[in-house]
Length: 160
Image (tube, rainbow, N blue to C red; front, top):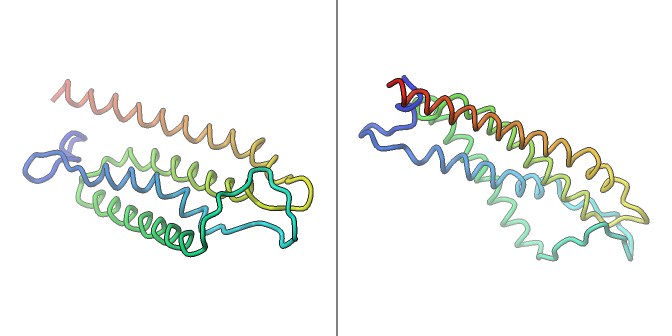
């Protein structure tokens, strides 16, 4: 099955749900990671912050976190099914893995940056010095892989 046919529905219309599942997976991963990591603040009376966290209620945080985890799980299932049915080009997996890793690092890094601590937040400095370049590298690799997929797709259209 060619790349062009792989993402089409049975009636020759483009299958939109794999694209929607990819988008939801990439968007929900940082939020679900943020929620799963949880608050990293030290239990003290007047903590110091590198960045003050947004104050939302515990219930709202729980609803958003559980919702993001459900969206991530549902997206992964939808993408696996799309792969089995031939509606997802296998080249997308490298793009998705790189973006999911970058999103996971962003979600965990945000918890470190917003943690209330005693004195200096050394973890925040490490996140910025080590985490930010890793995220940038992962995103640039994902863009490169995506551009390669675009070139391959156009090559199939020109030859087909």
